[in-house]
Length: 412
Image (cartoon, rainbow, N blue to C red):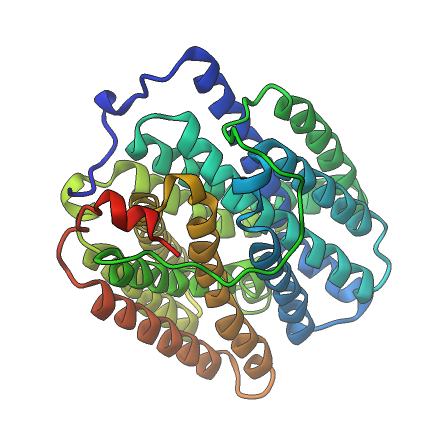
């Protein structure tokens, strides 16, 4: 069964209540993802105030990734047992606590704590909201597109809003987070209107669980797709941590609104690509991986020549690759997920993806001050390329096979 692009006939036949509930789940998901991106343009504001450099910036960002990974391991499958709404409520609460820490931060440890909790909220929401949207929308094509739009659209909007506040509002590292706290309160109210899709529920419990994998013919496809997305997230790591610093120091872009827009362009391109790509592009993992690697090559050229035009071109190309690979990965995950454990396999998918952020981001931060940006970005390119090629070898170039009912139920 080939992966297809969105069309009018993909609109769900679910009830009006389910469609409205899906809108509510999308709002919760997008706002939480937005909050995770708000700090990105503000690192260049915090850095001189709190006296830290690129390495500390990457460590703060990695704290976010650690939070995501920890929550996926501890809470990824919990909503399959305890319901989507309670777990999304926990995500909103953790995001609110993180927001308060950012708003009152006067030192690096508070930033680290806020970023860690922000990652926890993101991890909780990612697998849970994706599963809820998939259950509230009958069309799987539409569900995967909407989930991706919520995820990438929220991140992109967060970088833009953070940049606007950083440039235009007094005391931006405080005011933006107090405003965001109001937004979290609003989506907390919206959450009560989201129908619960898990019928047999147990109390919420926190217990580590080994990641599950798809079974049968889907295992290689699933792991391969997740590895390609891990490569894409490695590119995201550069844009989400050091890109604003590079824009300021190397390209002399000091306007934080423009910096936020430049980073947000990656996620806007990702969103546009996954929504507009024709069916032929989405049937195979090769086009998305090829576009992603092309973006990395142009990025290297832009860094070497210190060209803003090349940097923006690389942002658009790499963003398109991110969107194509991410969308396809979600479809593959949904196709092989046991319907009763949808968030479980989704948690594994996002766990692999977010692990792809750690090595490239730390490499950039550690080597930037020692060996310079050219060497560190070459190593980033090597890591991303090797990961993407490994994923391609595993998943192959054929369309994703259709799982049997037994194989879906055996996804463990």
